[in-house]
Length: 81
Length: 161
Image (cartoon, rainbow over all chains, first blue to last red; front, top):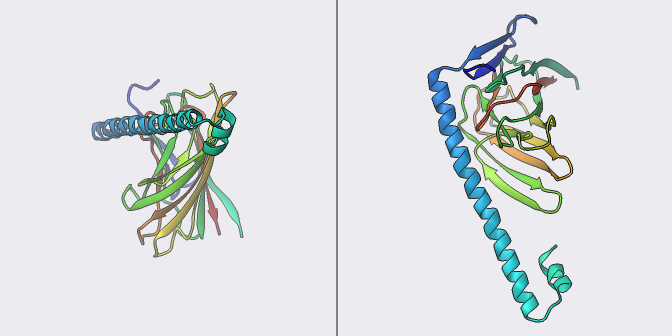
C-alpha cells in the first residue's frame, strides 16, 4: 500500500489511453483531509447520540403506556414496532 | 436521447483518496455518475467537488433502514457507498444525475443508492441536491469525508445528450 494517499485524475480532453494520472496528495491536501476526518468523526458521534436519545425516548414512552395498563402489543401498535 | 459512457475510473491496489473527471466536454445535456464503492473506514459518503469547489451545495436525503426511515439535510452533493465495517468484499452502489450541466443556471442533482451488510441490514437512500452556481460543469471529483476508496471501487461518467 502506498505511504502517501493518491488521487486518480482522468482528463477527458486528452485522447483515450492518455487520460489517467495517479498523483500523490500534497501535504496541504493531506492536512485538509485530516480536518475533514475530524469533522466527520464529530458528526458521527452527534448522529449516534441523537439516535440513542430517540430510542431512549421511544422506550420511555412505551414503558409509560404499559404502566397505564396497555399491553405491550397495544403500546407497540401505538408507537410502532 | 443518447447515453454515452465517457470514462470509467477503477481504483487499484492501495486505494485512492479521490477520483476526478476533468475536462468534461460541454456538448451534452445531463451527466450521470455511477459509483460502485467501498470506503476504508466507517463512512457511507461519496461527496462531490464540482469545478474544484465544495461550495454552494445543499440538499436533503431520505434513508430507509429496512424497518424505519430517517432524513437529513447537508451541504454536500454525494453518493452512497459501503463502509469498511460492512460485509467483506461488498460494495455499495449509487447513481448521481446532474441535469443541464452545461447551462448557465443553477444545477439540480438527484441521487439514489444502496449499501448492504449481508444478514444484518441494508440501507437505501434517495437525495435531491442543488449546486447553486451558473458555471458549466467541467470537472467532478469524488472525494471522501474520511478514509479512502478501496481497491475495485469504480466510478463511471455518462453524458446524456
